[in-house]
Length: 167
Image (tube, rainbow, N blue to C red; front, side, top):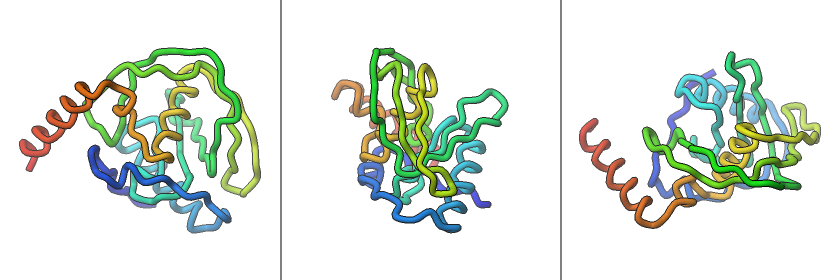
């Protein structure tokens, strides 16, 4: 396994729409393992392939306290949603930035697992937020795009300042 570099907002590659995975191969399974290792090391609770500059429809998520609940979703799609919740979100591609985003409270998801089998599951609460956040990445969207233009401009300025300090 290997740690993968995570793209940082406002990198334009974060706005690339991911393409479907045609076949689940050993290469895809290795990517998932590397993504999981990268997510845990960061540390985070979700990571989309887009964030590591691989534009395939793959996400890894683990909202468990003990890192025992890894979900690898290949070609995930939300097939139903209802309710509304507002949660504070952060993102590995937007380090140190947190803000409130409105999302569906419950979602039903269809995806393939690492064996290429299709499955469905229901998510609510933090898992529902994480799924929606990661699927946004697959569509080329970063959570800050849910915020006002003013907040987006301030975030870009703050991140540019951080980059200058660490350079």
